[in-house]
Image (cartoon, rainbow, N blue to C red; front, side, top):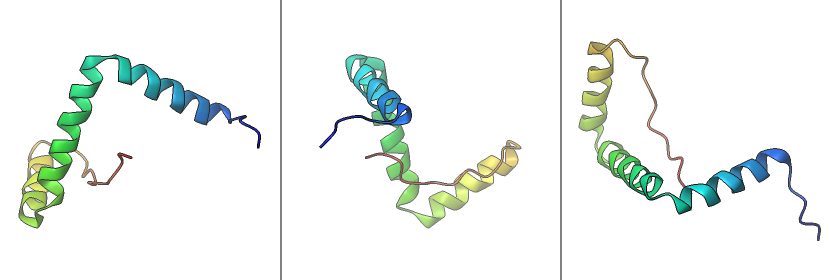
Length: 68
């Protein structure tokens, strides 16, 4: 099997490797996962988040699972 990756995959792998070396990114990822967990497990919290977005004139962002 060949181990050639497309440029997008190589860029993803390089970014992932670099982020594992920087403590800030580990903390940032942990914060994002905690926020996702907090809002994703409660419909009421999601409604409050949507209300905060409307009040602050932001587009409605969807809560989506994006971590591996």
